[in-house]
Amino acid sequence: MTAPSPIIIAARSWIGTPYRHQASLQGVGCDCLGLIRGIWRDCLGPEPEAVPPYSADWSEPQGQEWLWHALMRHFHPPATDPQPGEVALLRMRDGAVAKHLGILSATAAGPTLIHAYCGHGVVESALGQAWQRRIAARFAFPERVR
Image (cartoon, rainbow, N blue to C red; front, side, top):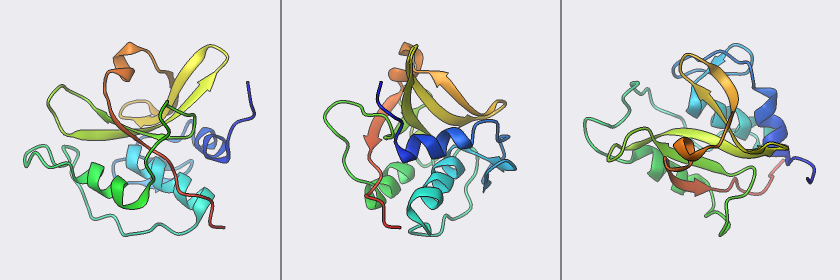
């Protein structure tokens, strides 16, 4: 197994951070978007745009893929095959908007997902079929700018 990328190292440093809706402060609290925002700041510098307030149901009532469009503005298309360090955008239910985020990774036991999960905080979960089938899109972080 190769050495983890700076993105994965940063993501793993957030493990144990409690879940807090709309938060983005390592060790204090974050949600799934806050985790991605924190990794961006850790690895790339200032965030590219301000994040407006959002509800826990995101854009479900409107059926809009707002998170997907924001990711398309600031991240790159992924490699053909899933790569550690990519951002995974997930649908929590079939037919729902994609509103959960995580970082693809791996351990000796297999593929994993580092994510902030309500009721659990930031964890590294096995990327089993239940999570894999929820992946709607993948994105690569831009090159390091610091």
